[in-house]
Length: 102
Image: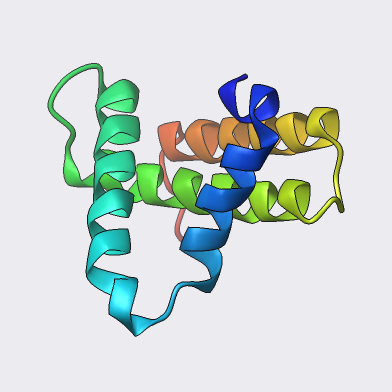
C-alpha cells in the first residue's frame, strides 16, 4: 500500500534500482540484499534458509519489474498490485511443491 500512497517516492526508488550506473552498484547491492533478507525472513518465519533467500530474490525481481511498469505509467496501481500478488503467489506455491524430474 505504501508504494501506492506515495507514487513519487516509488518512482524515485524504482528509477534508482533500474537505471543506476556502476558508481552506485555497491549501494544498490546492499539495498537489494536488505530487501531480499527481509522477504526471506518473512517467508521462513525466522532465520532464512538458502532456498528462502533464492525465492525472496525472485520476488524482489517481480516487485521491481512491476514497479517499473507502474512508475512508467504503463500499469495502474490496481493492475500492478494484482500482477505482484499473482506472480508472488505462483512462485511461493511452486516452491512449496516437490520438484518432479523426468
